[in-house]
Length: 420
Length: 165
Image 1 (cartoon, chains in turn brown, cyan):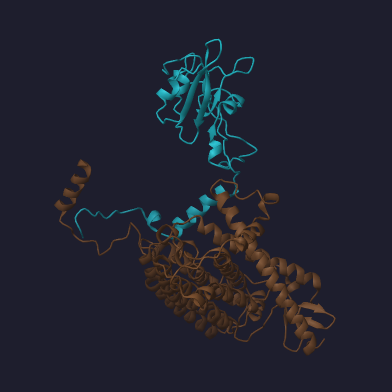
Image 2 (cartoon, one colour; image 1 turned 90 degrees about the vertical axis):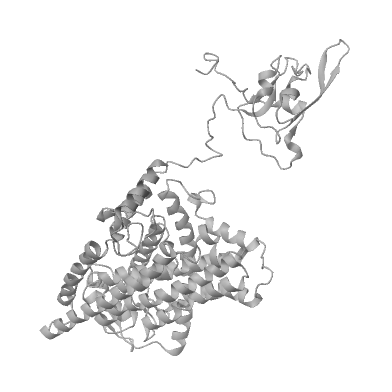
């Protein structure tokens, strides 16, 4: 079967866009409920359960409420920027989804359809470029509100997201090195042929997770919001649907990040231990590998949804486990820990790959297993050697080298504390 | 290093981030999968209050429906929040009764002194807490409304242990 005709391409493209848009918005609405439910369960509560069975219609009720509430614009705020900011923060999360393949190619009467809105040849670069626009929504929202809390939230957002942009980019470098290309369908098919990248690049996944938590402003890194410090951070002054759009943008970023993690490291829509879905669609419409079928598309789509759902669960789960970092901890984790470690990791991985190439091992399962061994070693080093009072500079960390403080001072301080 | 700052040498497991976080996540996961223990489905399941709970007032009535109140004036006197309004009157037999008896449940601090002081066991605080209203005026309970309350009277002390020993 040849490639799609232009007309069929346009119609099917529009249908795919609509499908992804609706599915994605539904997912975002579901995630808002999932967050509240899981938060409740972790805290031994039962969560929203009044609207519909098990509270399933809660997002609808929330949406209706937000539509009906009063819109307040603070005095002295910058009108157009204030109105534009929620839109800007919503937009990048949505368009990034365009390059994520969501299922195996679907055979239709008009030709085989790739289940991706836009198979851009610059895949990952596009994601990085668009995702970095997301910070504008936060910064503009914080700046235009004419409020100190919002402003501080915006400033924090800009510092944090720009710092972690570097870490995020560097954490994707290992994938680019191993894969040798940047389009996501290619990455998926390579993971089908060899191993899921989580094994050969698990250290990279660790870095990516940390960077993505920071990029999506999820809990250990929710500096821009920081309710206990900044009221609600950059969206303090927002109300009604504009506030809801900021919330939706947060969850939308989460869904997109989860989908990206699934695609980049966990084989995308690949069903594990089954070669029946190992197919690639070439540009001319021919399919290499297994034969496409509608039920395979459905199954792989469900598999993709399951993987994405799992990572969303991880996002929520982490949020209700760990406390927020201090601001200096965030910055030093980004600049002093993540980025140097990523550079070293890239160098080590590059060396290992050069050596494997020198040995003449072709890319495949065996190649990936060698890299897995390297990564396991590095992971153990990070967990048991590096991560000792160094990664997060918390209470146990020495501000300076352990000084030989005059011991009588310490004893004096001890005595004073004891006598209190 | 400033005076009084101590460097704590914590064990390695506590001062690592990844291991400690994973441990924490294991703990939260246990809570995630275990059944809900903290929530109470309020309108369906109600909280059982103690028989000594001091809530909404209730006036005791005679069998013919008259309030037992003799308008002696002790409860407005003892009331620390000054929330009882009592205007006494006398009927043709020379018996005193309350012409106006109002309790402002907003001002009331539910100390229960009115019940303690009442010589004829007429006014009581009750074992009842659901007294929401749509307007502030509705919180001023008149005599008729106080007599119409049906919830149990508060037991201010345990009859077997009156000194709470």
